[in-house]
Every structure is written in C-alpha cells, then in structure tokens.
Image 1 (cartoon, rainbow, N blue to C red):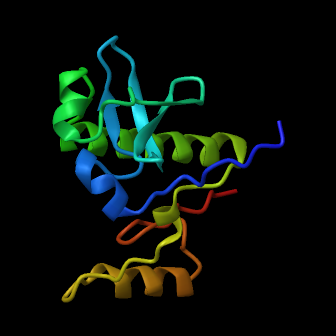
Image 2: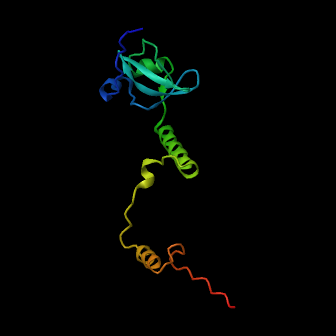
Image 3: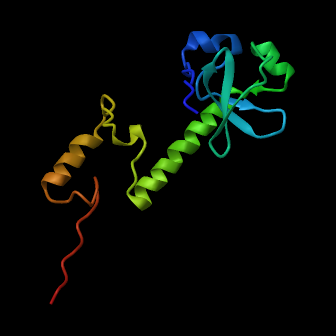
Length: 144
C-alpha cells in the first residue's frame, strides 16, 4: 500500500526488442491469446482474457526469449480479422442498441469521377421521390 507504481511505457522504442506493438495479439504457451499492454521495468506486460494484466516471465527480455517461453506474435491476418470483428460488433450495437458506431461509419466518401448516379439521385429527391431511387416508377393512382 502507498507504493508508487511504475509507469507503463507504450513507446515503440521500448517495445522494439520484443518485436511487438501495443494491442498486438500474442499466442501464449497454454493456449489463450493475450494483447500487448506495454513495458514496465523492461518487462513486457500482456492483457489476458477477463481484463487481467500480467507480465511475461522476467527472463524474457527480447523476442527470442519470448519465443523460447512459447509467447509468439500472431500473424497480420489475425490482427486484420480482429479489426473486422470489432467493426462488425460496433455496427451491430449501433443498429440495434443505439450504441456508438465505428469511426468510419460517419465518413462521407467522395463519389467516383464520371458517376452518373449522383445527378439522378439529386433529381429524384428534388421531385419528392427520395425513397424510390433512381429509375423507379411512381405507383399508379387508384381509380374510384
């Protein structure tokens, strides 16, 4: 109690000897995957499932030592897959529970050059057919 905690460093220079970056996925020797949190006192810290943070063995001071103990950085494909799953989860929360969406959900992307769809959509919305879409026919009026 009352002890001063050492600051966790997340600088790339401090993580360089381990060959990892913050939030990288590490395959552990017992099976579960952990994510990199940072370095404190030259020891790499990981976050395990359940938000438990713990250090690597103190003798693991570089990437080769990590691999000797069975801690290996996952491939880039695993990191991309995690990003896609995270984005899909955020989209689900946004659509069904009014949660915050992913950062890219609100981006207004430019229309490609030479596209003819944009003038058709603008003309349709000006005529009051915004929901009908381009090229859609108006419903016929019912006869009395």
